[in-house]
Length: 123
Length: 333
Length: 149
Image (cartoon, rainbow over all chains, first blue to last red):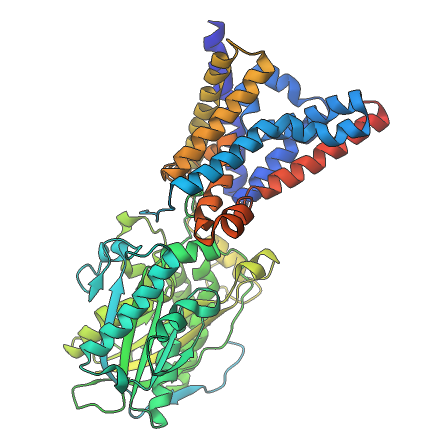
């Protein structure tokens, strides 16, 4: 039952974050790049005040999978490392926390570019 | 209209020898299915990049038009052509196969009408055969002006679809009584009404279309009702609506005559929203559809107004508004 | 805008705005919610799966990495842009949208080769995410150090 509830929370919170993004797009016509950065920065700033962590605790993937979760992970990593290693940690912690995601994006991007060709759209 | 100065040219000897079109698969599934001389089954056109495919369409259309007009390659003295890519590479690379003089021109989607004006002016100055061509390709234009093809984006309902195709027209300085002629051309001026939304090109271009149309009517002392149809290039549905409002305000009601090449190119089910855009729209519709109707006598006298939005991704990202231009030609049977 | 009012350069933007067809807001928003929620739920499933072997935090990182890889493949197969056409923010905002933003320019510019094409253009769309994200993380961490967080 706990597992089922967790799915519901992930779906609802993740969906709500995307819905908020869609509302912003509908009313401002912002492009993809800007939307991604806005949500990333929002997640990062919220975590700066310690507010995004509890949301991740509550909704799991619903809060960590949206790009705001990426900003949260960057800041969380940087702050944790800074507490341990000072300025050195502040510089390394963020990227270290996101290294897996970024590396896999780069490698799979490379792989796809080798294996596939872009196709034209039908619609 | 806050500014008016006469800028219509008269052409005494500009005859249309032949027109030839190469259209993409989606265009040939549209409203003019079967009208095109050559339709691609696949818009890669057996090339390894979309840019090379666009270039091959140009080569094919130029050769096709010369052949269809029963001319030799050596009969053509000048090629006037342009496309939407940086440094108009598709047209100029295609022209390197020919011995004719080459003028590469760019006025975005007004390029085809511009080429007809330049070509007709050349005939007035002693040349015998000039080939005019313009075209665009959906995939190359997407990359240059918008996003990578595989990026998932929700398109706004005011967007248009860049048409894939090339239209080429051979102009000759000799014709007989039955020949279709270009009789006048009005040069567009650059008009900017401050539209910032690069998706909404119809709204950006409509004021320039109004400016050129009204200038033509005043220059020639004609009325919209003197023409069977008035085709704009790629204003789309919204842009056409705006144009009707704007011209009505100047005292010209074009609502009965006005059609748009881009808006008429596709069926609604093809989900292009406002219709087609791109230099190919007017080049395809004029050569594949309007020329035939003029020859069969369905139309006696028409206007073709190519509309172009002159922005680049650089000006867009630097926060500049979108200037537009419209060139117009009068074509008589 | 009132009827019969003259359209001028000054009021043109307002006139166009009122004339524009409106997006089907409700449909867009519903799709964004459903697709975004579903992607997150799938992510949750991977977290449960990986938590059988790893601690919760590693499982979460691996789950995101898995989503990134799946989205990359869907981009290669030409599926992700079709999802994006109706899902909008629902497919842009999840980490899969980041993956799509990395992979699609890499694929698009492969024609320019692996150095100036794939290599140089890969972060054409997603670059701002990394640049802004890293910058803000360093700033926040330094502020935490200064003020003791």
